[in-house]
Image 1: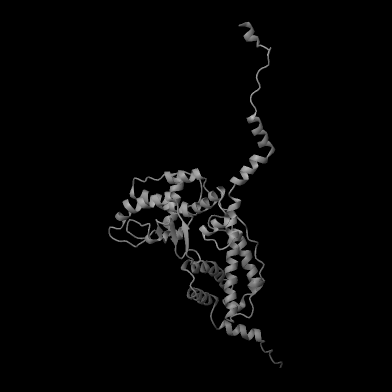
Image 2: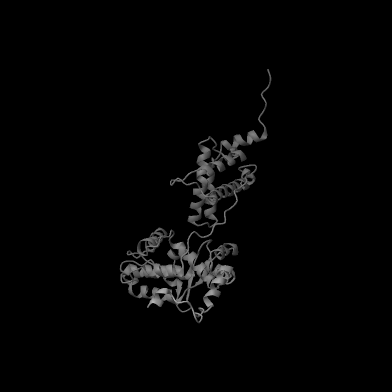
Length: 352
């Protein structure tokens, strides 16, 4: 009788791991570690939403533990993402697929550090090439003013909303940053807004125009005292209950003003004011690095996307140098030629 072949080191390791934590339990431990490192609740939610579907997909195939995951398994997940259709019937954008795959790779890097896996198969995965997309929509200066002037500032909430949207346009701050503004964050003397713990938990100081400050002063004088009759959370922009506005409320508010009040057929909400501010300032000659500092971009490459949307400089060059435009201007400058002496007289005038 032949003796059974004893299991090799890898089989023994896999057996031990199968008796320990599952991928789902490891995911919870990873998120707890990220929280201890200071990651924001929103970032933790994003990582969870990107990695948990992969864990569930593996569980449906009987793959409960991280050492069971190989490169072919990850490639299967990648094919699944490519074929996946959302509720509206559309496929995931390439960047959406990429963000999910990168999150899984980060998770597996952590597992490798903790010696849960012997090697990281996600490092061998060939990721799709990132798409360089321009901002979907921006306002012209006139469209921006149309949106702002469509608000009824004779009502308390109309005046509050006008002050809020003026701040978004003037400073280019994010929705989250606007919702987090406290009363003490606006410095009327210096003409700045202090953004505290913005994206990446970074503070920055942003200039704000006098026009926007004027609307904020009107709001503080005429409206905010009414909203704080029973409670004051300390936020700059408040609800009727004296609490700060939530991010979802800001999105709904801005979208309603754009499409319902101003009747502009453009998608987007709060972020379109950020895109528009950067594009309009670049059109007017602002330096890219100054826009980078205002927007709080870590990399200049992120800000340079707006240089591809700021079309005014290219339009001026096109008008000056394109042959058709040069000919049109030349014709416009030429005076009309006078009629020569002895010009032919029409038969009708001759009969008269």
